[in-house]
Image (cartoon, rainbow, N blue to C red; front, side, top):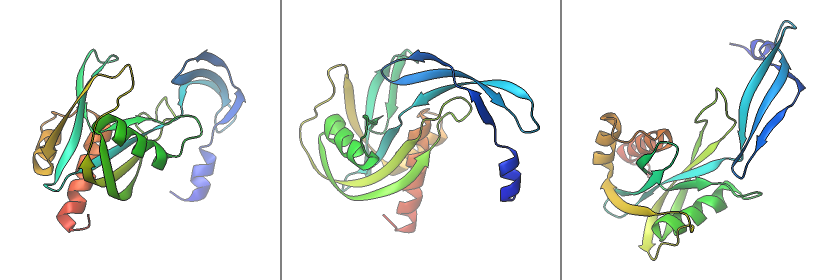
Amino acid sequence: MNRSDVADMTERTLKENEVFRGRIFTAYDDEIEVPGGGHSRREYVSHRGGVCCAALNERDELAFVSQYRYAYRQVVTELPAGKLEPDELPEEAIRREIKEEIGAECSGWRDMGRLYPTPGYCNEVIHLFACRIDSIGEQSPDEDECLEVEYIHIDRAVEMVMAGQLPDSKTQVLVLKIAELLRRGEF
């Protein structure tokens, strides 16, 4: 596909209609013009984004956090992650989240790219990182967070992803990416 094809797919906003504004996201039901001049609607969620990190200790074990996720009504095991605060850089957010959730001081930070978790209806971007754990101190989770930390060897984490035991998409992507970098000797 060349760039002119992409330009032909662009939809133009005719009217932005905010239908809900909450602490975490805003929902819209916009009127748009599609390529060729037709009109349609697009419902979507605007979210300021988040961060996720593969934090490895000296034994190549990843730090995982298990916590109750209300939307799924179950405990979910995932890599440390969190939401961006207003005007916060992703690099600042992930260091804050690592300290809060697992109590770690880390080095060897690496940008692992970004992830669009639900592009069909949400503009959220999750920024992915990896680091090496230097030391573990005390956790300081948010008041409304109840979480448990466990360390799982990277090989076992890959097995869990492949067996469907880690259903969180950001965790799956990051586990497989860091495993490949370790296999190549690049991390």
